[in-house]
Amino acid sequence: MSGVFSSPKKPKMPVQQAEPEPIATVTEDAEVSRRKEKKKLSTGGRGSTIMSGIMAALKKRLGE
Image (cartoon, rainbow, N blue to C red):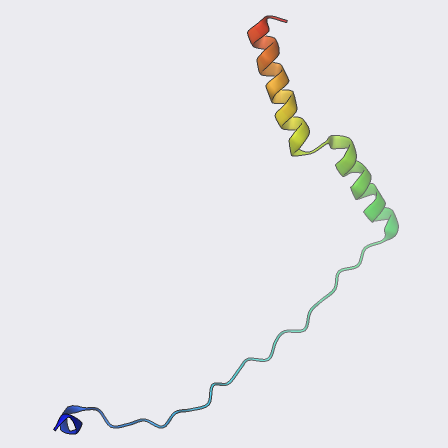
């Protein structure tokens, strides 16, 4: 009796997978890469900012 109240069966369709996009590679000159690396090393980044903040707080607290 449950078959009377159910919806009609639908045929299963195969799942179509989208084609992956081609991967684009980015190349840069060795000179540009060297400059970026040198700049990154000279500025110190986040670690030096944290350390300088801690040192400034200690100097302020100790009165130096």
